[in-house]
Length: 492
Image (cartoon, rainbow, N blue to C red; front, side, top):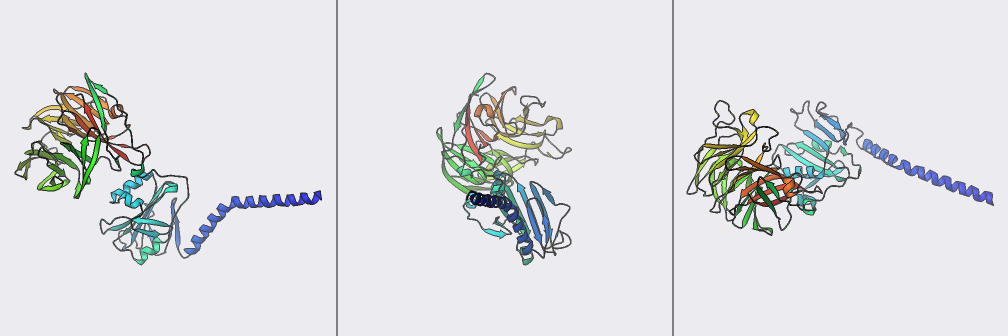
C-alpha cells in the first residue's frame, strides 16, 4: 500500500513539474506563434525589422537604406513605391521614439491638438497595423500625420503619408506596419489638469543695501501649461491679460490671487504684448501686422509689423524683430505709421547703425528706452543699452567677462524703477539690478527667492505702485506640465 501511494505521489510531482516547465516556456511559445501568424498573414511580402517595429512591405515598395535608423530607443525608415523618394507619388515615413509623455504631448500641441479632447478620445482615429493612431489636424495638403503612444513602453509612433489622399497602395503598406508592443512597466505622467501644482518657497534676498521681498500671486485655479518661452502679460488696473499664441485670457487681479474672467480667441498666433494707459493692448505676431484689442474686442488693425512696445501714453512706440530694422511708431488718431529708428542694418556689418546685431527685447520706460540683445562685437555677448527718447546712448549694462556677476544670457523683461534698472534673464535664471548710473548692484537667482529650481522667466512689468510683477514657468515635480506662476517684488 505504501509503495502504491509513493508511486502516485511521484506521478503527481512529475505532472506538476511538467506543468511548471510548460508555463516557463509559454511566453516564448506565444511569441513564436505571434511571429508565425505575422509571417503567414504577410507571406507574400518582404520584411524589414527595426528595433521598435517591423514593416511587412509589398515588393513594389522600396525604402531609404542610407537614412534608416534602428537604434535601441529610436527607429526611422522612409518607404516609397518608385525608384527614388523624390520621384515617387507614394511616400510613407515611420518613426518610433522612446520618450517621456511630456515630449509626446508637446508634439501633439504643435499639431494644434487639444489635449483634453485627445485624452477623452474625441479625435478621429485610424487603425494602422496593430495599433489605433490619432489623425493629426490637417494643416496642409503635403502630407497626413498619424500619431500613437504606447504608454507601457514609453514609445511614441509617428507615421506620415505624402499627399492629401491615401490610395490603395498606401493602405497596403500601412497594414503591414507592426509595432513592438511590450509592457516595460512605464507609466506616463498625469495630464496637466490632473497634475500636482507647485508650491513655491519664498525667501527675502538682498542686493546691495536693498532687501527684495517676494510675494506669490497664485491663480485661483492652477495653470499647468505645456509651452514655455511663449507667454506674455500686461497688467492694466485690476486686470491681468495673458497672451499665449492665439489666445488672450483676462484675469481679475488681487493680492489673494488671479481669478479667470474671460478668454478671447484670436485669428492668428501672436508673440508679443504691450499696452498703454487708455486700456489698449497691442498684439504683435512678429512677422505680420500688429493689432489692437480693447474691452475684449479687436479695436485696431495696423499696417506696422514687428514686436511693438508702446509708450504708456499710447502716442508712440518702438517696434523690433530679431535682426530687422527697428522702427519708431507714431499713433495719429488710431492710425499707426512707421519710420526707421536709430538701429538699422543689424545683419550687415557695412550698413549697420548702432551696437546690436540682434534684439531680444525693448522696453519704453517713463524716462528712457531700454534695448536688450546681442552686440555686433562678437566678444561682448548680450547687453542692455539705455537711450534717451531722442536716441542718444546713455548707459550700457551687462558684464563683459563670463565670470562677471551681471553677465547676461537672454533678456525676457526689463524695467526702470525709482532706484535703477532691473532685468529678467531667462537663460541665467536670474534677476539683475543696476543703479541709476549703471553700477551693478547685484543679482538674485530664482531658486533663492522663489524656491523654484529651473524656471523660465517669461515676462516682467513695472506696476504703478513701483513694484515688479514677474511671470515664469517651472516644470512640475510629477512631469505633468509647467506651472505658470506670478510673483510680485518690492524693495528696490
